[in-house]
Image (cartoon, rainbow, N blue to C red; front, side):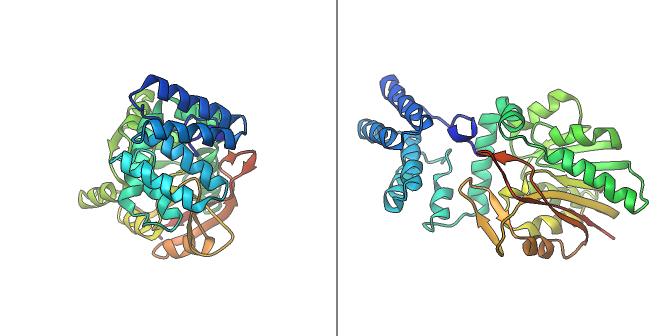
Length: 316
């Protein structure tokens, strides 16, 4: 999810500690929402001059400079945002990595995703469904159903693991065909939102690879593992697929969506989400039998469908 004013979701915010400075910052955002980047940038430069440790303002200024093609100015502002916030709530280090000024390590991505989704859990579903026309769980459920019917397999699963379950949108899409449903998410706030729905038999807060390793060590297995719109935050799909293979029952299915692009390899997009080429997806599931791979669009951003892929692999 693109968490900024352009997607209908307010950007992350940490106060400067000065109400007047905060007001000018919000004034700049209003200019930006109205399409006046120059005016917004002028105000933000005044804001950071008055409050040099105001990370949110530095980050907003950096984004404007990047959008205007001012790479050097953007890098400088992203660095200032990073230095002003040791926890890097906004993900400035990831933006610097995308600009070639650092490395997008898994640890940085995990920290960024956790903080973003903890903060946005209260309005997460409204943002996805109303502003982004999100339909990933429905596409996965329909495709898993079609694949099982074509293979003359049972359409019901004894156990399912929902990786990156969020608030439970995928759990709702699959609950009727699953006997036991487990969900895991990196965000504790998301897990609490999912828990309130009463859909899951078990919910855990944790990082995907660590959770999968623990499940394998405990010899817990699943007939179906899904990952709806979560692997966009993972560069190395192969590591996840290998870990999933360790918890699949014989003939178990791994169904997931990713964003994609026409080229090769993996791209870190402006949205700080990874896009994986089709060849990358095929290589990632080489230890499984890829039974389905098709182009899909699980969301719309800025009026345009975001290109993606839906894959289903089998432990056959």
